[in-house]
Image 1 (tube, rainbow, N blue to C red):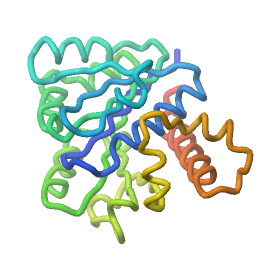
Image 2: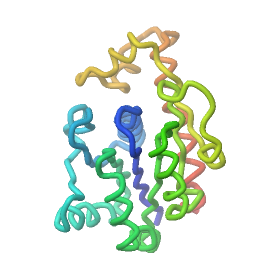
Image 3: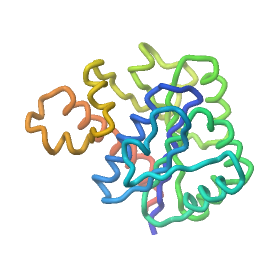
Amino acid sequence: MTSTPVYIICSPRPLVGKTLLARLLAEFLLLKDGSVACFDINLKEPSLLEYLPRITETADVGDTYGKMQLMDRLIVNDGIAKVIDLGFHAFDEFFKMTHEIGFLKEALRRRVEPIVLFVADTDRVSARSYPALQDQIPANALVTIDNEYVIRGELPRDMATGEVVRIPALPSFLRTYVDRVSFSFTDYLRNERDSSTELHQWIRRNYSVLRELELRLLAPSAK
């Protein structure tokens, strides 16, 4: 039996493109597998629930009941990939919880594979948070996301040592376009006949990158 991936998209900072990445990943998985389950843990940021309400439910890690409800959903090896859009306000509490309950060990026992996608930034909070994740998350399950819209230059050295995925920056006018709640990456690929457009190329590249990442991280466990 193959494993079930749980993608945890996170940053201790707001407005770094976390939900944009969650949307890309969720739509890619939905296109590839036909199903995906998404969990939105946000307060005031643009949230995944707004963009993909049919496949997303809200989650709360502010109390014990909410934590257990979420963990019960994530720990199941049902073959349906999970995507968590983890708001910056819940970053510390979420990883404190996973550490205290031994989530990673229990997940691996049940053939569930957590993969943490950390959206990098150059601020002090990110610089403190990343080493803390390294202490808790195995190197092969911790991926640094280099969003070029946020980081205009080199990644901080500590964040560039492991697996890195780069998301090219979109021009501002295209970013405004994809930020519309009604916009779908997959629908755009299907309906835009001109495959040479910058947005078409950007989506296809990112879907390919996500596919390659999935193969690298999950292929060994599926053997």
